[in-house]
Every structure is written in C-alpha cells, then in structure tokens.
Image (cartoon, rainbow, N blue to C red; front, top):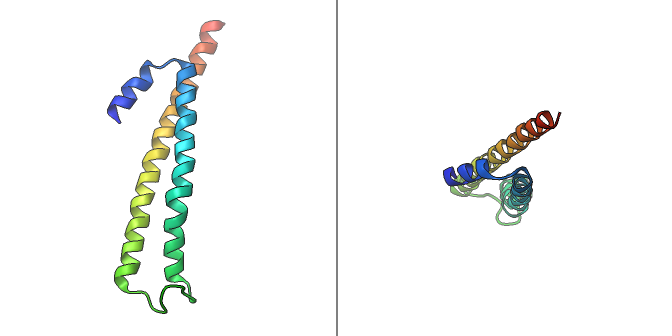
Length: 101
C-alpha cells in the first residue's frame, strides 16, 4: 500500500479520479462478495429458526463473529484508503481552481 500511496501522489488529477472510481468499485464488490454473506452467516446462527441446526455450537458462533470482525477491519482499511484518495482529489481540484484564477 505504501507503493500505491507514492504512485497516487504522482498521478494527474484525471488519473486520480479514475483510480478513486476503481477503488469505489472494489469497495462495492467487497461489500457484495464478503460483507453480505458473512453478516448473513452471523444472522442465521443467531435466529430462533435455524437452517443448519437447532443449537449452533459456541465454536461456530465464535468463528462467525471473528470472520465478521476481520471483514470489518478490511472494510475499514478500504474505506480509509478511498477517503484519502477523495481528499487528494478535493485538494488538487482546489489548487487547480486557485491557479486558474
């Protein structure tokens, strides 16, 4: 990620916009492929009517919670990186606007 941050600073504003768009698409893909299934697994284990078994083991519940926690950390890292990219875009756009005046 350090290499990516250095490369981001060398990008033009147009390239940075494209990169941020790709990061946003990656975030959406992460939400659909990882977040929703893991949250559904946790939900299925905690519901009164269970599809898998009537009483899930504590190990199954603990594993599901641990996976959800790791997924949350990954999502947090992706969102922070996207936020940094968007802040760079805002700063560069302000500089462009000031330099044109």
